[in-house]
Length: 458
Image (cartoon, rainbow, N blue to C red; front, side, top):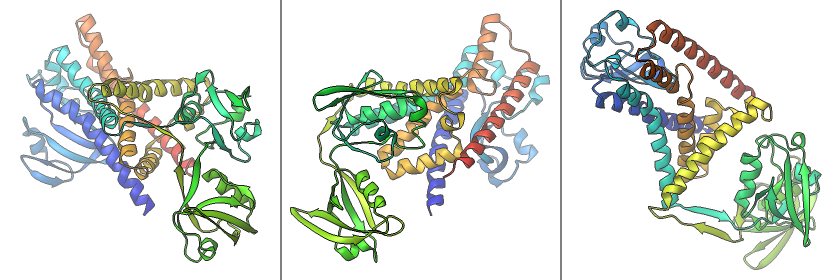
């Protein structure tokens, strides 16, 4: 069931992004007087599709249909769901159609239009992806705003973690990370897991009214996508969602809504602290205390060999949350800020760290499998998290597509810039060679990324 749900959310995400991107090309082509013979989701063999001449059909189109489509479009689903394309007559693209080269240009063809119109068509997909990202970030800012955990005080340091190894302690207050001021726990998460990924970490702390600096070399920090750094905020208390039937917690009388406060005499102030303490007592009988409303209760509970007692734990934050609200005007710069941060700053910073070796390639670049996993995880966190993930991917797709690489929109745009500057088109043979090389390299990269996804499955 979990696999089906992962595939389902992946198809929704990819479907939305591909449709929006290709619709940009399609709409711009039609608006500038060009024909669009094919609107395809996926690549390769046509599985099924619809057009006004034949209606709904399976398999490859009949040759006479292809030749008589005219101003109509065949909307199709292809065998390999790795993207999509719009086939515009007179354009050398991923359809690999070269038959038009030896024929005179027709007024509805791509090659017959002025350079500025072709530039609009080439960049329209990227523009639509940027617009989608803006629309989502803008809507989230207006309807959801931002909820910031208003503390930088550490509530728990995980046992055996990097933070514990370097002496960071419970109740330390984080002032800055790598000279970046910290005002909320959200800043801690961003600084550790995004902004300084693959770098050494310097944390300025306030401990018992004294300023302390903890420096952690990057080889000790590791890749924080693989493991948690070990810091958790204060007042994140463990509350039960329920118990598992036939397990020790049920026999002890624990029930939904109870807050566990002690395990074997150890005060519990954090959900992860509870998990760690139960694991430490595998195969032991431990006294567990919990609060039910205002009443403290306790029982001796046997922890199983698998380090569980049969509870479903949730986290309840009882500290201050700062709610930041935006209106229709203030949401605009907020949306552009999110687009720049997630779509450009984080993207190019990560690529730069891959190039200099701070982050392994397989950790920084995710393919279809990792995207599918992230899609399902974001969906589990709620609708806002899911569409926020779609916005992030939409910006990433826009940035990648506009890179000046053969077979990408940016590569086509460079060819058009050459034509505009030198007043003559790049020879067809050169365009075909660039397209073929670029396409082969992209397929090779995709296969390599998928391989890395597979070997990284946990």
